[in-house]
Amino acid sequence: QIQLVESGGGLVQPGDSLKLSCSGSGHTFFSLYVMGWFRQAPGKEREFVARISTSGATTLYADSVEGRFFISRDNDQNTTHLQMNRLEPEDTAVYYCAAGTGWVGPYSSDFDYWGQGTQVTVSS
Image 1: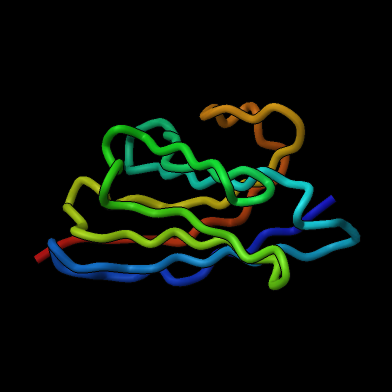
Image 2: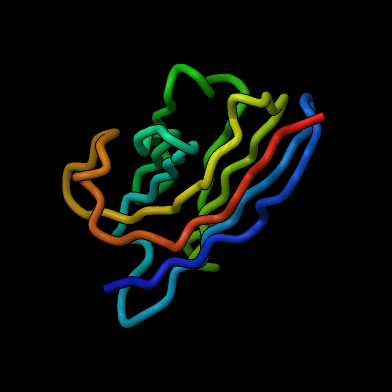
């Protein structure tokens, strides 16, 4: 299995950028996992943000973040990142990193391992 730890959250103003990181550890091969990011705002269900394939060649984004957020990974460093640009107050949420194997779509049930989350607050 794999343990995931997110970092990089914080308080920013609308229009700012922020980069989240997720480090994977454990007796596993990071490159075997599809990596994803989800978020959960207060009073709302957890929602899909982005997903990246094992090699990094294929990415998928939620419509709400397409063109503003970019997911990447470094298999040598066992990390995945979420670059968030032009942040909006609606992006305020706890952001979770997740890992899954096999066919992994934009659904939380497709992911087997989760980090503890990092808070992102966008406010003026």
